[in-house]
Image 1 (cartoon, rainbow, N blue to C red):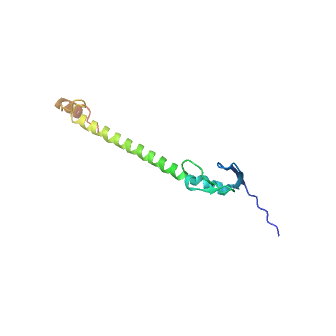
Image 2: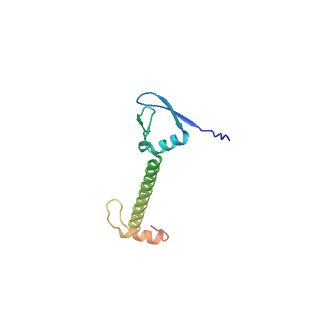
Image 3: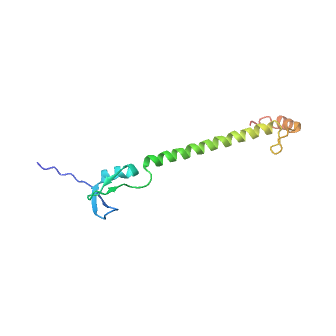
Length: 115
């Protein structure tokens, strides 16, 4: 009985001695995904690893950037609401003084204004 199974290889060159060797595509993919922690060796015994950020690190950083952006947006919305509330109450956005006529104007002329 003969079993034939195709195997795909990835060719690599040792960064220390220059020997060319091959590894299965699955092994290569696993080492590439792990980056710094995915250590392997050339046939002459030299330690190798791929540099850069792993897929998990990239995903964590992307999530952190997204969450920071969401936090900034929420902070800006809170600040805008605060300014609108102060303006509706008659407070000057520059000198922070309150003016009765501005508050009366907003209340009578723009009753549907919601901060």
